[in-house]
Length: 424
Image (tube, rainbow, N blue to C red; front, side):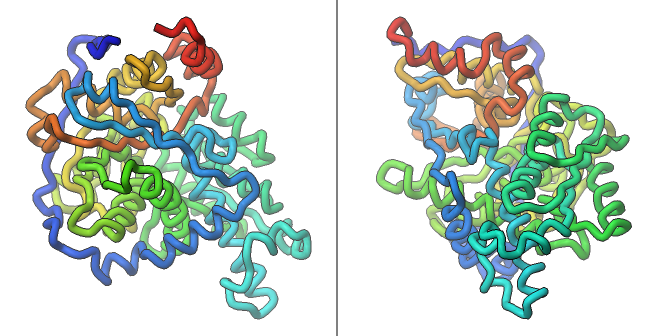
């Protein structure tokens, strides 16, 4: 059984990392101020609601001992979100949960009830079908969040409009449309699409269901972010012996996923919480730059990266409240590392399972591959031989055509080969 890690990365691939000098000390409690943004009670509420939905099941936490050995660390786990509600992405947890809460509040207001008196079962019962059908939700997306909002709208019965920018792939647009949403292209980058969605919603009387918050818009992004916490609750049950990892590498676009996991683990494990590392593309590193400067910083331009779900130039206001002191470090990586990560997962070492990871799903491994090429980064990220690392597989083959072009095989072929008796 080999543990040598091939290096299919082109020469000259770049990466850089920084320590967050403002990170909270390990003895610092999560505290009441941060709890106003993301709280234990609302994480529990989201878990209870989402786990009651039809088709809910925890996603796997894959152990990758051979890859860990090749990377020079003790332990490596990968939270594989490819099977989440059939959407191939963790986003199913956030957007659809926020759609449910929008509709719950509408029904509660119409009947003079408290929002907590209306649950998903009431939405699915058909009793409020007319009121629900009269509602329209919308958002901007790089692909996966829009799919979740569209799926939630179809599940619960309201109308949905999704705005995409020109570089969103046709495969991801088609996947959104399959859930009955109207997909509208607008010029500019992701952040321009966010602004367009807000303008259209105000003009049309629609409700924006976004994962990024900004002044005056907070409740719904908070719902989205609490929904993502379902992954953290599952991981706590799945880790061997319930022992936390030493490091968590979490990819960041606007930062909602990263903030959710950071907050939950801080609440859950306190001083024993893992070292928290943000992973971003080199060309869309708004959190990296924000940690460097100490304040929210904006990245402009096309933000064109193969890690399409991370092509965001502005940190969510709510996410920044957690990550400003909750993130210990950040690493920005060349796209070539993400492509290499996808291929590495598809060609497992030793007895490790094959993993189907999309471009953003492989970003955590991309960071570890970058550290191998640039060993000085290990000290910045405090990585060592005894490190136990957790990665988030935020998406699988959300665009099967692109996945096959990058890996050279379809997801089905990758998984079939891994289960073949002929596998070396």
